[in-house]
Structures are given as structure tokens and as C-alpha cells.
Image (cartoon, rainbow, N blue to C red):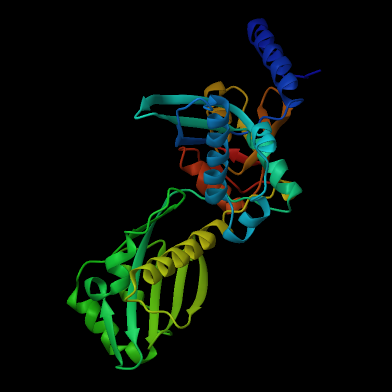
Length: 358
């Protein structure tokens, strides 16, 4: 029963009772965020007497599962799911559609879209001791420098063999968009001046010039056929140092070069995933208070919560004539929550235990 401290019009009282009934009913059922959708899955099969469309669709499910896994799992975890059966994959599928299909030159081709159940997928990965990540597309300032230790010289931007081939290596699961600096003589001279101690150089002036919130400074040291990648990385205010070594490798061999770039790009993707990990078993409860008379604001909040990736679920913990208190189970940091929710033009006052939506 809801108690009101002052008299209110009977119509408003009925309105509150209606809301209370709906919110109470709602709070008994956790509200989960959206599903995972994998689009543009292309599958083809020889069209002959043995043609089986169901098997073709099953291949589409498996390909969609692989694509999604590459996007939300670190490379080290992919081996844990390589033997996942089609039966188990299909249990994770909520819906699918065939966007296009055609028969050409005795071949059947289709393009599929597959929708995976978020809750089931998280549970499935938990059984494999895998914590998935929810990385989003991110623009990253990319500063590559190739240092030849034998000649004490360096190659920069268009003179760098890695830069020339960097964008040629693309995978549909990549989330990082690399933004190169301009050809700037001042930058070149700054690097040249500090080449002997380049690993410890802070690059502050260059980074400020490009207003770089997120960046990767990739310093590649080459000595004959031995290559070392030393990377300074900043993602969402988190700083990382990465070291990768390759021995007896010829970078003039295109196959070797492509393999090395893919390896390094996957490493950077894993770095980005590592700070976007979602762990439902250790969800952080966050309480948000909304004025109960502001229905528009409460509906906007609910729609936003349903779209935030790290929100596992939320309930309405309290409802009265002054406020609605939402209890949100969030699988990342409070700062990440505030940043994510601000992208939807929702401002939160954090000065009290129950944060207030302004």
C-alpha cells in the first residue's frame, strides 16, 4: 500500500495506483537489455541433388556465432568454443531472417541476419569460464614509428612499411578505427630529436595537437629479422603498455608482414576488450531516483537503461508520491555508467546515496 503525506486529487490518486500496480508488476520481472544481432552473414552452397537448405542455414548460424565471438571475446578465449555444436548454437538464437537469396551458376547464395539471446549467450560463456566484452567502435589516434636499430634511423608515416599496409588488413570484428596524424615537419623533428630515448618520451605535445582522448603510439624496433612492438595505449583514461616480439621474420615478405599486422591489430582489439569486460556475477548495484510526477523522464530513463550494454537488468525498488527509485545492476564501473548514460542526455546528481536524475 502506498501512503501519501498530503491530499491529492482523486484522479491523480487513481493515476498513482495504476502506476504502482504496473511498476510493482514490472519489478518482479527483470528487464534485460537488447539482444546481439549479427548482420550480413553470407553463405553459399552447391545446388545439386544433395542440396539441403536447412544445412545451409545452420552454416549461417555457425558463421554468425563465430563472427560475434570474435567481436566480444579475447583471442585467448576463442579456442574454448571452437568445438561448439550447431545444436548448442541454435539454442542461443532468438530469431533470424534471410535478407537475400539467389541461385546463380548452380550455386545457392544467401545473406542472413541472426539475433542471439543476450541472457542465454552470457550464461553459455559463463559455463566455459569466459567473460565476454562489449566493446564499441572507437576512434583512436595512431602514431606509428619504425626504428632501425642497426642504422639508428627511423621511418615515419608514408615511409613506414607498416603504415603502407596497415589498412589492408581488415576484419569485420575490428572495433578500432585508426586515425593517422598529418605529415608534419615539427612532429618529425620532435621524434628525431628524441629517438635515442623514444620509449620514454611522453609525446605530450603531439598528442595535444591532435586532441587525442584515445591513442596508440606504436614504436617498432627492427634489428635484422627481429621485430619488437612497443606500444603506449590509452583507452577511456586507462593506460597500457604492450610488448610483442617476432623473431626470424622477414618484413619484406608480404605474407609475413600481413600476419604480423593482423597479430598486432588483434592484440590492440584485445586491449580494448579487456577494459570493456562484462561480468554479470559481480554486477554493481546503482540506485537512481526520479521525480514520480515526471513520467516523461522516467520513461526516457527506462528506454536508456534498455539500451546500455553493461546493464544486466534493473528493477523498481521503491515508488511513492515523491520519487521512483530504480535499482540498476551494472557490470562495469560507476564512472563508465555515468559516461554512457550522459550520451543519452541524462544528467545524474551523485551527491547522495541514491543518485538523482536531473
